[in-house]
Amino acid sequence: EIVLTQSPEFQSVTPKEKVTITCRASQNVGTGLHWYQQRPDQSPKLVIRDVSRSISGVPSRFSGSGSGTDFTLTISGLEAEDAATYYCHHSSNYPWTFGPGTKVEI
Amino acid sequence: QVQLQESGPGLVKPSETLSLTCDVSGDSIVNSNHYWVWIRQPPGKGLEWIGVVRKSGNTFYNPSLESRVTISVDTSRNQFSLKLASVTASDTAMYYCVRNVEKWGQGTMVTVSS
Image (cartoon, rainbow over all chains, first blue to last red; front, side):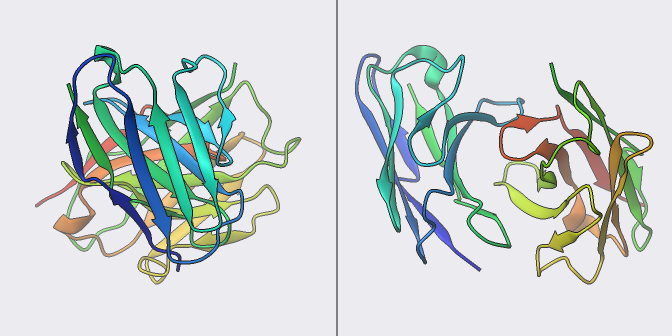
């Protein structure tokens, strides 16, 4: 089983700030690495798929990068609506797993 | 527009079997090549992948749940289902059905309690 770790666990930021969240995999996951945003009492929402592919309807301030075992989600110019918990998720092989989450507070 | 909707009892007694169904609309399970997935989230905690089913009926489960889980697909009803046997309080969670990684249902809360 591939274990995903995220850092930081918690981040307190101000609007317009740049946020960087890191996800590290215990094995190479290729391009099967995705990012979700989960606001309180809502279902997770996909914001980046396949490491760096943007999602229709998701603001362009969200971007993803990385390769192999190290990946990054960047939010450039944070807005109040971006307050949420962010999870990385891999689908490169079974079982698919999730990172523990990073809570972003504004 | 594809929509997924979970349904099933919101309260299950300990040692009994949790049964949920996911109705898929706006997409055809039999005519697509998607992954149909169940994921859960205990209150205040992170996401846990339960397992996946393909239109062929092929499945793969989280090893930590494999002995208790069955996921099946009913292409005639365009739905897929989750059964989790011998539940305990630790199975209390929001349960989500998902298409691949991108389309999630709204989730259904299941509480295990006598």
